Length: 187
Image (tube, rainbow, N blue to C red):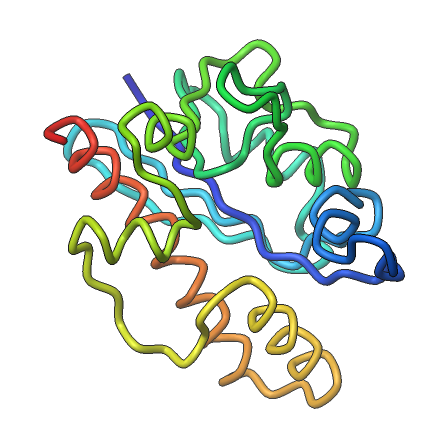
């Protein structure tokens, strides 16, 4: 079955809440503009990375990229509340807010953050990767907030090297989801 491993990068344009800035930031899906939608397609031995950047992040382009896919895999991507904490994820709600597309309606979806919780592992993707000894190249980007700064730098300067570093960061996120899925199956 053809699988798509998905991760997004965003640029937050809303105002942070004084009461709970982190909660407001993560749940303010309408004010997270898509900067990269990374999709790693795996169909047996055939593998392909698709990265939609900026204005390419449209409903039509996402649907075209997912043509023939039977399962979606994310880390904290779900749009529905999980059965452990009752939280929604991030990626699919942002994609829905920005394009009107609800990816986990009609396609089977595995959210690896929930699988981690079921196995007693807690934390963001990078923290879980470290715990499970999944290697990462040092591209100088530590997390999504730093990725936002890189996008803003790219938009301000037009520096293609900055964009390539951001794309490399996103590429590593989606490719490492395959490794994480494999490690969790053995955990």
